[in-house]
Image 1 (cartoon, rainbow, N blue to C red):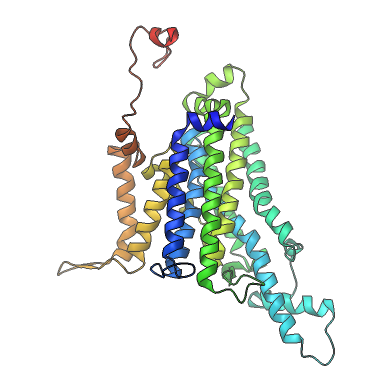
Image 2 (cartoon, rainbow, N blue to C red; image 1 turned 45 degrees about the vertical axis):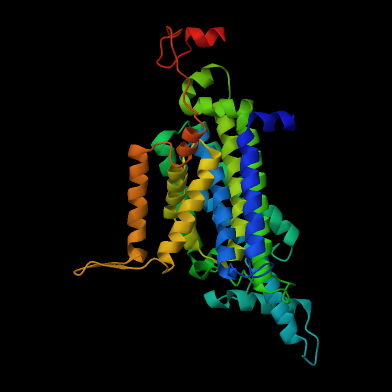
Length: 410
């Protein structure tokens, strides 16, 4: 079964081969495990880029294949980061508190240690008690489950309410954006239980690995990000290669016809929306330990809009296009906003790329939409000479694009 799937989709093997070579190259050239030609900070940038590529694959599944323009998937990405960030911050703080109390004449009780941890974490928002949502923050296993369970549950509830009401098109996009905005505004409050605008910080300090240098940790997280992207891409390609993929493409092209054929359109949408939210949660859980901090601004609606732009630039409806778009925009953004691109002095005005990058990105999106709707991924189609089938003969149905004689006899 797997062999047949890979035979039908040779591009998957090509993608995995390229990703494997890239991973080996970065490992060999990194400071932590290789020649030291790639700095630790840039290895983290590359690791974060692979995480963004993974959420772009999830976005392409839901938008490029099913036609659901979700402007809320970055909220699931952020929730995954918060779930793992809670354990990282709790466990790190616990180590610090226990070390500082170790020299006390009277050994502290478990309650005193817990109170001290809570004060250290929530003192910045004027609290000294653990909120209810931190009940399992001391358990890595539970928090790892919550990385996929919380985004998945939110997507399940939201999707069930939206899809059962048959909300589609721009109205569904507005609803997903409203969900993201509401979640971000709630997390900005100090009593949200997640430290409000301060967010969770110090996530790059992995508990129980104090003796491991950041140079080596960055490579480990890079490996984990590469593995997650490989597995996520393989799963997505398998999902769209079979009947499920045919149905969701049919929903994208003509939802009413698919429903008339007896398929549960709402069920397929709900499953896809929930699964992609879980994938986004995993990507976020790997991203933020490399970023070191997460706050509610990461969940702002503009982030999900950027995600849609990445997929459009790379070429939606092509999994490799989503990866290309995310990687291209992420690395170019790091170049222009990281102070590496020299400013251009025009005499009366100086173009500072830090300020002009978002404008350049917007113009790129408009240009791709108007002149290259297949995105960067469309170039690979040209190289591979992949063209749309040349349809001839009389149509066998009243609708434009219906089955034609030659296709029916093949």
